Every structure is written in C-alpha cells, then in structure tokens.
Image 1 (tube, rainbow, N blue to C red):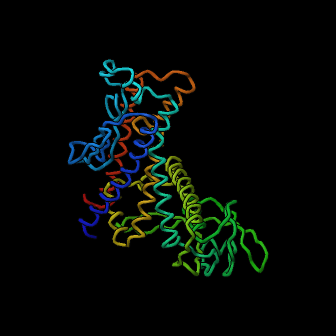
Image 2: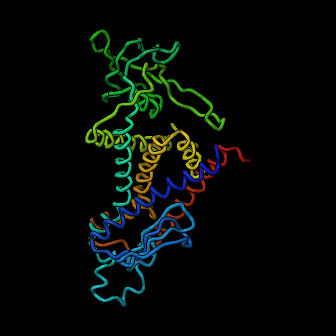
Image 3: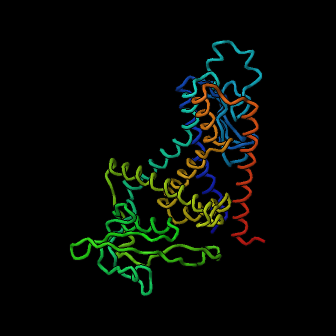
Length: 366
C-alpha cells in the first residue's frame, strides 16, 4: 500500500470527522447565544484561517489529531473560567458559555458526539440509496464438516429467522452476533420444511493470521450463505431508517466489545491507534469510494462513542459534571474539576500511548 495514499486518506477522513464534531458544538453554542472565539481543526500553531462576520477565527492547525471550539469567556479549551471575565459587561457575560443554564451547557457539549452519529447516518443513507447495503439471505448453503453448526444440527437450506432472541433479516446479522459473542451458546430458530426448528449452537474459536501476519482469534459456527456479494438498495426514507438501525447496532456492539475486554473475553491488542487507522484508511481508499465512505461512517460512530465516555477531558466527562450540578443544584468546585481534568488527561494520554504501542507491535517495527 502506498504511504502517501494512506496518509492523505487518513488526513481527509480525520478532518471530516473532527470538523463535523466541532461543528455540532459550534452550531448549538451559537443557537444558545454563546459567542465563539475559535473553531480549530487540529491543535498547535495555526497553518491558515480566517475570521467570519461574528469574529470567530476558523483555522487549521499543524497537529491534525483532533480539534476544538473555544468559546468567549473561557480560559482555555476545557471551558475553565477566564480571569478576564471580571472585566466584562453584563451584556458580554451573557454571551459566555458559563452564563448559560446547565441544560444549555449540556446540550452544547453533547452536540459534538451527536453530530458524529448524524454524519454516520447521512453517509450510510447515501450508500444504501445509491450503492446498497451488503445483503445475503440468511439461508444456509453449506455446513462445514466438524463445525459447531454440524454438531448443532444445521442443514443446507435452513432459513435462519432468529438468533439469541433477535430477529435475523440477513446473513450479516448472524455473522455480527457470532463475532461479537464470547463463545457462549446461541439459541437459533430456523425454518425447515415450512416449520420452525430450534437449535443451540456453541461457536468455536478460530485462530488465524491477520494482514500483519500476527495471530488473531474469532468465533465461528461453520455455515456459509449462497449469496455473499449482493447489495440491497433502498429508497431514501427506508435508507435513513436502515442507517439509524445500523448505527444503533454498531454502537451496542462496540460497548459489548469493550465490556469483553474488561472481563477477558477479548484481547486489548484489538485496540488500534493512529497508525492502524491510517493504514485502514489507505486500504479503504484503495478498495473504492464506497468502502472509504463506509469506513468513515464506522469511525464517526466510534468517535462519537469515545467522546461520550465519562472521562474528564472528553465530552462525556463534562456531561457527568453537569449531571452532578443538575442533581446537587450547584457545580463541582473548579479546584476539584481541575484535579479531575488532570486525571482525565493522564488517562487519555495513557490510552493514546497504549494504542500507538499496539500499532507498533502489530507492524513488527522492532
């Protein structure tokens, strides 16, 4: 894979995701009467930018790993109080972030992750309308000899209609359920000779080599579908509904995978950082425009979920503080918030170092 292709694909993808995330913060802030000083894609020294009619500085900065919206009256991008606020007029104070109600501040903070979910729905809706959603009828065409499916009693021609209590509309639904599982038995209902038949299948672990030549594991039950390359197109309203459902399913699946890392059923080595994302961006770009857009949608969902984690420095941490303020009737002291932000910064930086190390190890650079 070409290094330049991977780098450009990564930068374009990250710029779009960060821009929409910060645009969510910006748009809701302006709707609530908050003046915005800076809208930045990236951190560090400015590369280029301009002022709009509201005197907001829109700029691109040299470090492309993120971005921020700095609001009027904030001491920094974490919305700490500026010492200059004591010199503001009552009219100017009204346009600061701190002057707004707890619900308004929560809405402004939540708007960033929500914008990422909306972006994913828009991208998937476009794909499902013009390209189609990957679709395979949930009909068993082959049962692998010696597999979990053979033991469970699957037969060619079975139509899978339900798995683990959830409706199965396509073969991909069953694949996702198995792969996000941790090897527990799954109750499956199939239609065979016009009758519903209940089966219990326990997936088997499969050790394989990933694209870096490293060992990885996955769960399989050992069945194949007869139509793995078709795409199902929707009219636009139906595409939106399908996209919302897909976004929900991916979000739930992501939380489930994170939980499995904590209980030991899934390896933390699966976590990837900027190197892995850049590599996958390049691979998606080389695979075609539709694959690249799909990957952008998946990453947008994950960015939204990551920012909702209740960790100080992230949007979820701010929302946790506002929930505390709404319940107690007063905010946590700025001194305590500062300590929390320091802990949050340490956690975020530690995670970045860890996932980057995962990338380095997976590439076998040392």
